[in-house]
Image 1: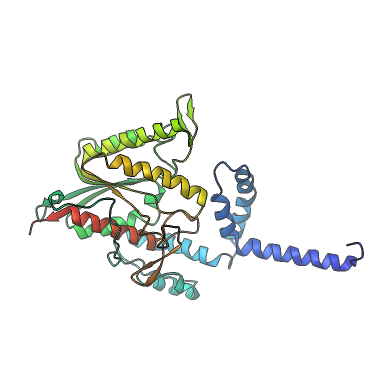
Image 2 (image 1 turned 120 degrees about the vertical axis):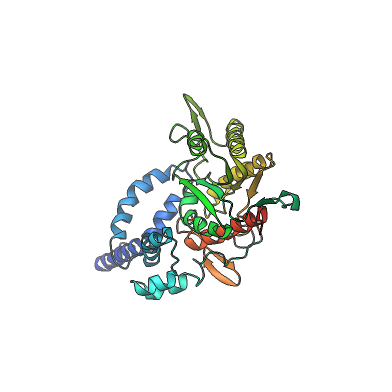
Length: 348
């Protein structure tokens, strides 16, 4: 190295610096997503997050960086408004009229059209003819939708629209990000559920929760370490208690399991809690567990950002490798609607 001319060393250093800046700016969304996906117990995660979040914030304000990421973000911000009013928008048309005409291929043409997706993974069990519930033609179907960010991001609003297919409905929606059954000291879902259902009887309750539950359970001065036998026992009791409350408050309740996750560490945790959801839901005659593994995977039960539906490529999962895009929300919406139509029939 001593024989290497000083001016050449300086040139190489400058080139490496420029390349580093290029990668930093054009991959900031991917890098921050990778940091967020690190195992919660990783010692490096807090340090990397503290160091890189300010960089990501700056990069996000710079034009032409992380263009696909920015397109998705802007599409969410602007298109979600008419969605709430019941107006459908094709993302291809939206983006072609905005800043990103070149990014059309990211979205499948029908990725935001409710009721066009056919799925086979509708529930964890077979629906028997005698289990079907008959409703009068104009009877109001009372529905409660609850959950964490897995409901709120990309899925909940699409499901609300899709439920119109069931005829006359009255939908109550409550979702709260960064919550779960574990940290009652932060947010108490049991108390909130009692508030939502007080004096009411629903035909249907749909829940999607658990993404934030792979952590220690804190109750008073007691801390139960995540993953221990004691933790599993405590968590199973919480799930059973919540399922029991839903069973008493609805004709049918549907507990949606977690989809495959990008991070192998996080995926393992989510499959663990999902197994508990399935086992505890099965203990209630009016409970239905809904698996998302087949409908939101690569065909082998593994994570896939894009999912093949009816021979079309649908962008299903966000860049964080956890939440749904609107396309993914529509896939899950149709899965739920198909199941509800099998369970609830109207007299004509």
